[in-house]
Image (cartoon, rainbow, N blue to C red; front, side, top):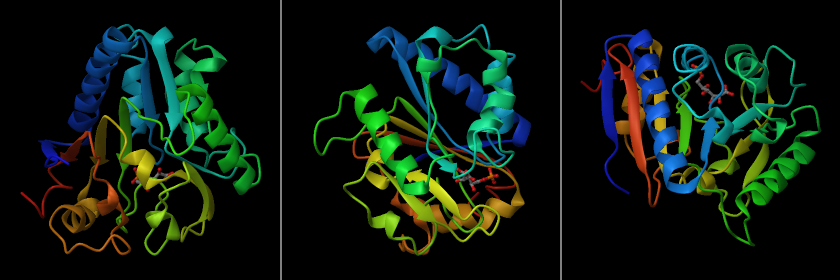
Length: 246
Ligand code: 6PG
C-alpha cells in the first residue's frame, strides 16, 4: 500500500467542498474509463454536508445516470428511520436527484441483521459479477472515523476486524443507540481503488493520531485495518481534527 495522502482544510465546510470536488472529479474519470462510477458512502454526520453539496452545487457536474451508490454500513433500522444512513442520504442527496432504483444499492436494514448482511452480499456479488472468494472494487469509498477509532461499523474489539472471507457482516457494536448494524469487511475496504477518510472537529484529533501515528493495534484502533492493496487512501481533515498530527 502507498503511504496515505493527508489533506488539511481550514474547516468542516472547506473539507466538505473539497470532498465533493474530488468525488465529482473521480466520477468523471470512472465514467470515462469504464462506463460507471461506483461510490460507497459513509454514514454518520460528517458526510451529510458533502451529500448536500453533491445534490446542489455539483448536481450538474456529475453524470448521475452512470452512478451506482452503495453504503459501507447501515444501522438495522427501517430505511425511513432517522438513525438510518440511507435515510440521511435520502434527505441530503437522493431527494434532489432522479436516480433509477437500480442505481441505489442500500443495505436492507429492515431485515434481521444476518439476513440484511447476506442480502447485501448477494447485491454486491450480482452488481460486480463476483465469483467465489472475490470482492467488489469500488471506484471511491468514503469512510468516517469514530472518536473510538472505528470506521464503517468495525468497532474496537470486534471479530469483524479480522474477517477475510465475508463481504458484509452483521455486527453488534458498542453504541447504545444503534447496537445492531451491517458493515462491509476489511477485504472489501482494502479492495477499493480510492478511499477518502473524512474527519472533522477537535473531538476526532486523538482518533486521527491513533490511526496515523499511534502504535499498531487494529483491535484497539480498527481504522488502522484500512490499507488497500492496490488503492489510494486520502485523509481529508480539517485543522481541528489534524491538530495532533500537524
Ligand atoms: C455510521 C458510520 C460511522 C461514522 C463514524 C463517524 O454508521 O455511524 O458509518 O462509521 O462514519 O461513526 O461518524 P460522524 O461523522 O457522525 O462523526
